Length: 252
Image (cartoon, rainbow, N blue to C red; front, side, top):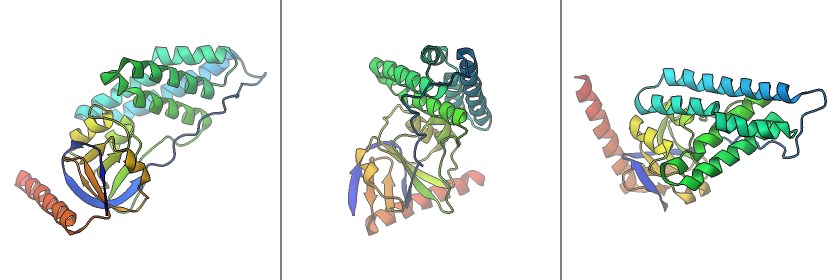
């Protein structure tokens, strides 16, 4: 049994196996250049089409969400076709880069700019990087990043969750969130509170947890216990009983 400490951003005590987000979209080849049979305008059009597809997909997700989740998804959808991002990528395409590498570079530049601003704007860097990955995936014909599938409820582990993932996850399967990055104002934190999902962020040691490890997560104190004991099990059972009681009262 060992304890990991982070920042509690959404209260609740849950017990379950860990499951990590799948690997991120791979970084495009830094030396990739489009061929002589392609044109700058044609490659820019490919990028624009992919960005618009990502925007439309995020807007579609927003239609099935509500509250903070809906607002976050719509804001992220706008970021997919942000003129600053596409203009920066266009300059790299002018220099011969493929659209995949161009938007990758542009995403890094925009994220660095937001990071330098600090505060709330710095928390948006992950959103830019998520949009960048989705555009690259669309250009390469790869699956977009997403929540892993499981037959049993689990606690989701990630470096940080993108708003499109957090806003559309199934709380019946994802019973808690644990991230090694992020902060109290990250979209992971905002949406976890909106969904009433116990969550701990900013816990660097979370990266050392293996898939399938049993976890006790306390979203109020910001603590996570790996291979918990009797006290943690009882705390999770009491919390589950309170939640069940509140739901029964609400239906009555």
